[in-house]
Amino acid sequence: MSQVQYVSSRADIPAKQRYGLVELGQENGLRKTDEGFTVTVDRSLPVNLLEAHTETAIGEALAMADQEKIDTVFVTIPKRV
Image (tube, rainbow, N blue to C red; front, side):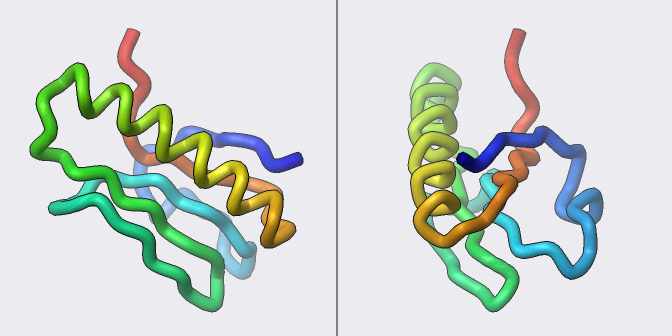
C-alpha cells in the first residue's frame, strides 16, 4: 500500500525513485513520465473547493500508485490546519 509524504518542493523527491506527485498548477491534470506520474490541482479554485479537490487528487494518486507499484505519493501542497 502506498504512502503519502508531504514535501516542500519537487526537489525534495529522492533521485532515481519512481513516484507519484500531487502539486498545484494552472489546471487540473495528469501527466505520466518514466519516473511515475504527476497529478495537478488547479490553484485558481476557491479555497473550499481547492481543499476538497486536493483531498480527492491525493486519494486518486494513492490508488494509481498502488496499481503501478509505486511506494510513495509526494504532495507539495501544504496541509491546512
